[in-house]
Length: 384
Ligand code: G3I
Image (cartoon, rainbow, N blue to C red; front, side, top):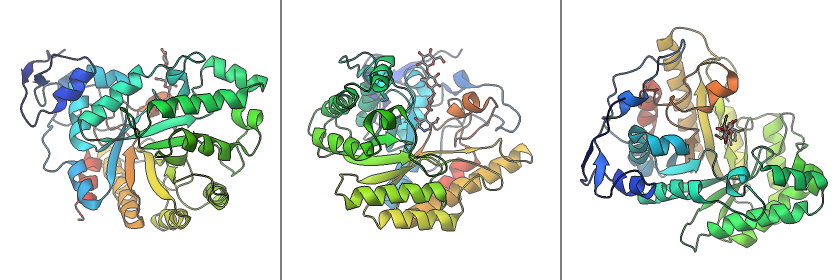
């Protein structure tokens, strides 16, 4: 493993602040640019990017280009590489203006036992983001996955389920209030509450609280922090279709009832190959009808799988770049205000673990070098 050599802090090496906040090294030092890429190199799998030279120098940063277009550009962040890998911190801070915790703001992490909140891991990511002038998207207050065992038990028993969930939302949003020391401006209040066929998903929360429960979640969140922007977040509802229709109808109903919902998150887990991503006209039409409800639209979890396509490595990477470019371009045109990738490096992506197959779904490869997708994204942001 390459040794990490601390160098004196200079103006460009602003990583020091966040890194020292997460206890990595002494204040006043930073890691040398490009030193750590070799630490993270892995053998490349078929269909994934061959390792590029670990060139960390790029002409324009995504975040500067995105600023000029009036859009936030974000990445989901995992705690372990943020602590362990200098290249991860360096690219995150350099390229992105928004951060989402990939896991550590979910209930199993934030309230592992009833009444005992643990904000340590999440706060380290918030501190890093704040130190680098990045905004934070909170993810997620309510979901049917990644709940602590005690909360699942309470939900299943039905007794006090509503109070327990409300206490969770209130506890989290009180800690992250926008008039407090650790503000989190936007939250996914509830994640994936609609099924692929457009029905209300049969979850522990739907069973415990009844079919009208979604409105309550937003009201409780709004009471805990009236300044937080509150989002409904889901996958597979990006283009037009049954699920997108159902999400739109749900949100229209909430808006009509005066429920404090401010936005919708389109996750955008897509792939290369036929019908693996929404068509540009469908995506534009869906965003337009959501915005017509008065809602803000964020892309919250984009990645583009390679395993769904065919062709040589270079062909797949070119197709992936095109998918990223088409979707970002459409979203900018349609008025999306925040565009987040679910990770940023193929070294840390949920997809191989989930699908059981190697992939390469993100804009940086496993050696932290920018892929064709990265360059395509910069061209779109630059207006080219
Ligand atoms: O925390 C445990 C750890 O204690 C244990 O040692 C380790 C052993 O495998 O597992 C750890 O839990 C893992 C957890 O992530 C935290 O790292 C789980 O196994 C793993 O399944 C879990 O996966 C996450 C997944 O949500 C859970 O459904 C992914 O990292 C995360 O990317 C993914 O994110 C979701 C979004 O929240 C919602 N939209 C879809 C997206 C992708 O599935």
